[in-house]
Amino acid sequence: MAAVRDPEATKARIFDAAVAEFARHGIAGARIDRIAASAKANKQLIYAYFGNKAELFGKVLAKAMLDLAAAVSVDPDDIEGWIDRLMDYHEAHPEVVRLLFWEGLEYGATTELPDEAERQEHYRQKVATLQDGQDRGVVTDALPARDLLFLLIAVANWASVVPQMKRILVGAEPADRDRLRASVKEAARRLVAR
Image (tube, rainbow, N blue to C red; front, side):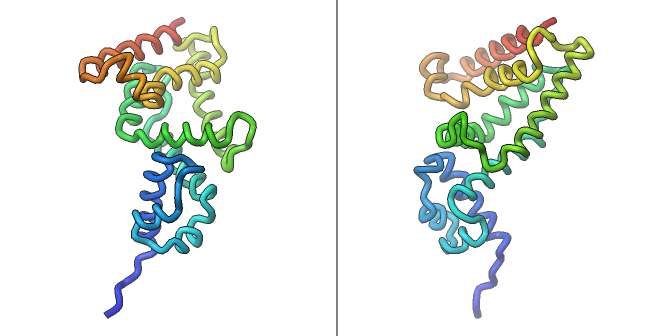
C-alpha cells in the first residue's frame, strides 16, 4: 500500500526547516539540501512550493513578521507592558530577530526588500498608533513617532540581536535577565515621558 501524501504537512515541515536553517545560517549560508533533509522532503518540492532560496527566505520572514504583529501590538497607553510582551516574544522566538539581522546583512540599507511595501504599511500602522498616543498627550511628542518607535524597538530587541554581548556585559543568570528587563523598561519609560 502506497503512503498517503499530505502536501500541507509537507509544506509545514519545509517551512519549519527553512526557519531554522535561515535563522542559523542566513540567506547566503542556508542550503536547500539541508532544508530538504531536515523536512524529510524532496528538494524539488521546495522549489515547487516556495520558489528559489531568496523567495523562500522572503516568505519565512514575512510570516515571522505577521506572527509578531498579531502577537504584540504597540500600546502607547502601556509602553512598559508592550516592552514586556515584545521581549517575551523575542525570547520565545529568537529566530525572528536573527532573521531580521540576516536580512539586514544580505540586503543592506539601499536594496529594496521583496515585501517592502507591505512591511512599510505594517510599520505605518504602528507609527500611527504611537502618533495617536502623542496626540492624546500620553507619549512625548519631542521625537517624531517613527523615530520613537524605532528607538523603542531597538532598546527592547538589542539583547536578542547580540546575546553574546548580553551574556558578557550584563550576565547570564536569571537575576541579570530581570535586572536588564527592568532597565530596558526604565529606558522606554524615559523615552516616552512627557
